[in-house]
Amino acid sequence: MRFLRQSLVGIFLAFLTLALLFVATQIIVGAVQDALTRDDAAPPARERVFAVSVIQAEAETVTPYLEAFGEVQSRRRLELRAALGGRVVALAEDFEDGGTVSVGEVLVELDPADAQSALDRAKSDLLDAQFEERDAERSLLLAQDELKSAEAQADLRERALQRQRDLQSRGVGAAASVEEAELAATSAQQAVLARRIALAQAESRVDQATTLQARAVITLEAAERDLEDMTIRAGFSGTLTDVTLVEGRLVSANEKLAELVDPNALEVAFRVSTAQYVRLLGENDLLINAPVTVSLEVTGADLSAAGQISRDSGSAGEGQTGRLIYARLQAASGFKPGDFVTVSVQEQPVENVYRLPSSALDASGTVLILGADDRLESLPVQLVRRQGDEVLLRGDGLEGREVVIGRTPLLGSGVRVRPLRVEAGADPDMVELSPSKRAALVAQIEASETMPQDEKSQLLGQLQEARVPASLVRRLETKAGG
Image (cartoon, rainbow, N blue to C red; front, top):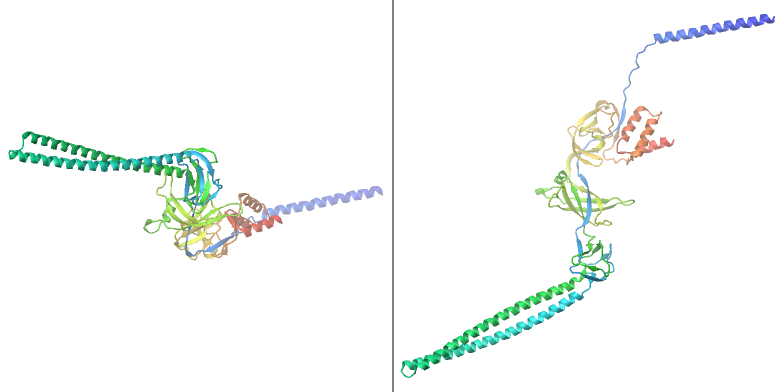
């Protein structure tokens, strides 16, 4: 019985194995037949539709601006130099780098001993010259009187000679008397000549004394100026810089002691290209007094000041290009000469232009506009001006059309899109991303498995721009946090 039971179990297991092999064979054969008879036709392709931001183009009059970099400087700078050498005996209390002084304030006093001695000598020389002039004038008066006396005596001698000649003609006088009278008259004439020579010498002495006195006066004035130059005063109110002087130091003539700068007479000098300079010319090719904004970026608080163009340089400068322009600043609080600043100049208005984000224009000078059935069309335009993140364009057929403002390499003519309209006057909340932040967001999008491919492409295109919507950044950061 036991043997029979085991035999029946073995037979049952054998038949069960054969049945399972048969079922497996049937499944394999059916699968092979299904694979052979299956239709390999590709499924119908589905057109990809991209979501793009568009804005309506409207012609307007825009006042553009140009940006440049310049240096702040003062229109009034005075180098304080010692006119004469000497030892410093006194300094003003505020005579230090950054010290504030007022007009007329005594800044430096040099030892006046030598200058005072020279002044005293000049005064003494002037007194001598004045005495010499008075003595020469007295001598001139005496010479004039002596000349008059000699002339009178010569006249008397001449009349005596005439009487002797009359007596001789009547036969009364002697020839010896006539000759004696002639000799006396000749001697009187010689005396007159000598007195005239003495008068001329007296007049020459007066002239020399006058010249000597004039020279003494000049020397006295120079000595007074030298004595005054021993005291250095502030020519105007301002701030001291480059101070290199201490009390007791011996300075030489024409040595620079410090520099006085007027902080209230600031201007900015900046260089622009020749093309930009031409845009700043008005009527009669004269430089317009365009408004200027100067800004200095500092940590925590930016400094800014307004100004106006005042002039340009007389020459381009050796080895330089463009033009150097100067603009006067008003109320430039916080600025110092030597600051390197950013200058924004308001140009003349430009009419009939379209202002669009710079991302709307490609390198070939075309923009993508929304056509029929929400398909993109390429339209050539003319670039008029770049203004930061915006461009000013002109183009036929652009008026009233919707322009794509966030172009990506996936977009082109004929591509069907889903437009996301942005108001023309809206100022969306845009932020600038650092290269590391942008790279992190790109890696996050590429690693996402739940995000559709179309949305991935759109987001990657938006992240290629320098500025992206803040809402996009917040959404990506929220996904990363989740």
